Length: 166
Image (tube, rainbow, N blue to C red):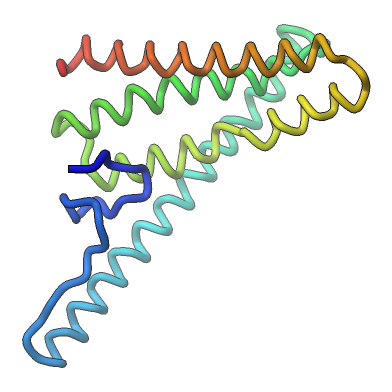
C-alpha cells in the first residue's frame, strides 16, 4: 500500500480516485452527482481552512518583527517551522488513529496548513538576500529554514506518536 498524500480522497481507502460504479445510467448519474457534491463540499471546506491559515500567517507576520526585529525574516521561519511541526503531528494522528476524520485531516492539512506555511515567501526572501549580495543571510535563511523545519516536523511526529502511539 502506498503512502497517503494530502490530496487523497478521504473516502477512498486505497488512495485513488473514488468513482462509483453503477449498473444502469440513472444510478450512475445520481452517484456521480453525489460524488461531485461531496467533492464540492470538501473544496469549500479546504478553501475556508486556507483562509484561516492565511489569516494566522498574517498575524504572525505582524507579530514576529515587533517581537524579534526586522533584521531577519523571523515570521516566515516561525510559520514554516510551526507548520512543519503541526503537519507532522496532524498527519500521524490522522492516519494512525480515528481521532481526526479523513475530511477534517484534508481540511486541516491541505487548507489550514497550506494557507499557513509559505514556501514562496521563503524563496522570495532568500533570493532577495542573494540579489542584495547578503550571502551569509541567504545561507542562514536557507540552512536554518531547512534544518528547523525538518527538526520541527520530526518533533511533531514524535510528539504525536508519544500522545497516541504508533
